[in-house]
Length: 310
Image 1 (cartoon, one colour):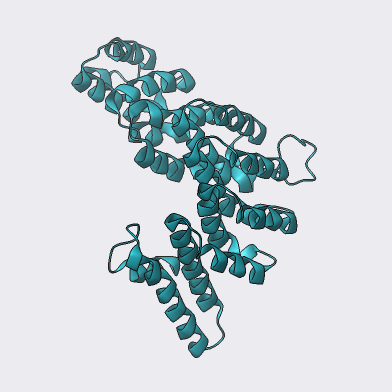
Image 2 (tube, helix red, strand yellow):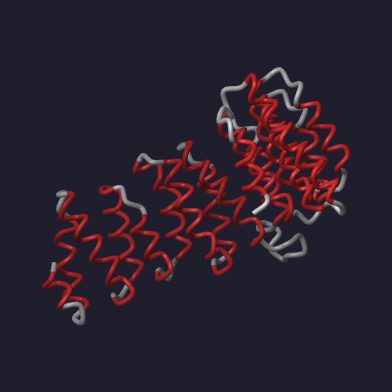
């Protein structure tokens, strides 16, 4: 490895030396090689091809951070993003991997080809792999602000079409996907051009026959509340959902009412109003804990309020 690093000025020769190790299934050797490639990646030629080698190795060693360290240097970031979305299901650390990937690559979204990324996400949403579909849904919600508006000449790649895509995903057969799609609508809502129409969509889902959709939409209303045109109706919908026959829906509704109360506190004009809304938030966040296994930590309400106000 030291000799390879010393030979880094002769990049092609150094790469040829390293590729021999890529075919070695020894995890220790492969890990060392991946570390070297990550270190010299900004200097080596043909980075898209090198990314492919690195990706294959990471699938084996299951260490996604090495890909994230070099993502900024990859010319074809759209294809690299597709690889990363697929990665979690291949290395078996879906939830942790997904959050880490999206938190790292989100800052590059504005630099990506919007149409190409949108086509990639539409393709991945049709995947048979549930995790890949969930990652594609999450990515679409985060990518939503970067899509063009309804006046775009590309009518197949704009915010209204993407919103319709997310709505359609609430009809997935998989219950987990239904809930996930309904939950991310709240992330996209602030950026929807026609909020009156979008609010009607959210309101309709509060009466959906599938409890996973109601569960997800209760969460979305809490996220979208500052941007919802009919806030009184939104609050009434949450109140209704606190009496749902499914515990998960009730807890999600109370959770959103707590978030909204924190938001109202931040918008208050007096100390008295501020204190009142924070007290309301604590009541809404603690109430479902008494009969729920979901939020059982005694300091949950305190930590939630502190986090919400940061």
